[in-house]
Image 1: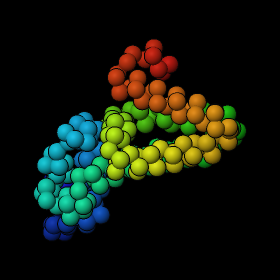
Image 2: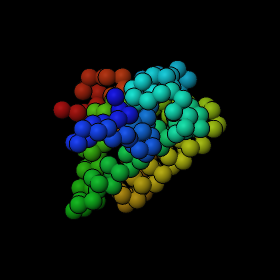
Image 3: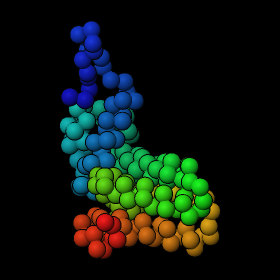
Image 4: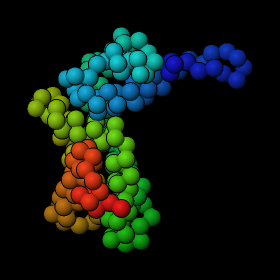
Length: 180
């Protein structure tokens, strides 16, 4: 159960609201990634997080806010990964290569990959579209700044990432992704 953990003194340490919120987000990444916004169940998310379903609404005002928080988390993880990968690069080319390799590593986390794609799929809802769009713009601008290239070069980098997202989500053979 996620809601508590034994202490070394034999007493029970309750998780803080922030720790529960993180557990809910972790569970929601999986549920939304697998089922999408409309089919995802807050009951399943609560079970996976080890909390009661009503407690989700103490942490998030509604399912849509939770979905948006999941997309923001997934997008922030991508930006953080690119920033970290670029940190010690010795040249622009090295930075781009490191970022590409780091992104390939992110693709191994199927839950995060599918949650990211589900955010785009749910963008028909204007209340979801705007925050998802804001995350995409922020990620694009981060990439553009890190590669220190033209907007066209940034678009090409992002386009390759989107291609890899789709290929990995569809579990295409490696001959389609260029991976070894």
